[in-house]
Length: 391
Image (tube, rainbow, N blue to C red; front, side):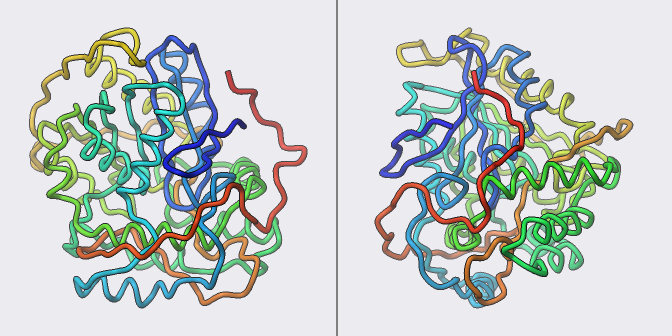
C-alpha cells in the first residue's frame, strides 16, 4: 500500500477505480485498519462510477503511531466523561478530521464524498463541520453525535462486556481471531448470520495486517475528549445520509436518529436486522444507497482540484417519527466488523482497557508526541493472505 504525508503524519492508503471518477473517501472505525472496508463493498462503489480511497487512521494499521508508553487509564477517563468532566487526550476527532483533509491534499483532491463508520462516522462529521468546502456529501454509518444522554449514548451491557473482554493470548493470531469471533457474535447483525469460517478468514486478515491496542486506546481518549459534538454538526451544510442498524447493541439506533436530527436536512435510513458490523448481504444495498446519495448531492462528473463546486441537493429534515425501517434480506457470507477490542494484540501487559460507544461532553487535548511512521504491532503482516491490487 502506498503512503502519503498528511497533517504531519504518514498515512497508509489504497486507491481503487478510475482516477477521473468522483472520489469517495472511506473512514474506518475504532482500532481497525482501512482494509476492514470490505472488498465487495469497495468494488460495488467502483462499479457505481466512483473512485474509492480507504486508509489507515493515525495510531492504526501501518499509519503513523504517536509514540509508545503505558496504556491510558481508560476506566478513569470514561468515569470523568460520564461526570461531564474534561478528558485529556493526545488528540481528538478534530485532529483526525484534519488528517483526512490532509490526505485529500496529498492526493490532489479538492472535494470528496465522505463515508464514515462508527468512530469513522464521527471523524467524517467533523470533517464536514470543520472543512465544509472539502465535503461534497456525508454518509455517517452506525455512529453518534456525542450526545451524552444515556438513552442515546449507552449500548447494551452484554455488548459493552464483550468489547472490554480480553483474548486468552494477545500475542497469538488464533487467540485474537477466536476472541473477536466471540465479540462479533454479540455485536453483529442478528438478521444476517454468517458462516464461522468466513468470519474467521476475514478477522485473520485484519489481525495479520496489524492491530495496535495502545493506539486504539488513544483513539478512544480522542472520542471522549471531543465531548458533545452536536453544536458542531449543526453547522454541517453537506447533504447528509445517516444509516443505522435497528438492532445495533453497541451504538443504539437512537444515536443514529439523534445524529440525523442534529444535522440540517439530514436523511436517515434504519435497517432492520443490522447490528454493529457490515453484514455481507447488506453490502451491495449499502453501496447502491450511498452511491445514489452521492450522485444526488453532486451530479458533476468529478471533484478534483480545479473542478467547479457542485450545488448540494436539498434534503428534507428528519423526524424520529418518520424514520423508515427496512426489512432484512436473506443472509450471505463474509461480514466485516467495525470496532476492534482494545485488548487485542498487546505487545506488553497493560491494564484491562475499556471501550465505549459514546462521546460524553468535555475534553482537553494533551501535548502530542512527535509522530513517526509505521509502528509495532505484535502480529506479523499479511503473509500468504490474498488481497487485491489497488487500481
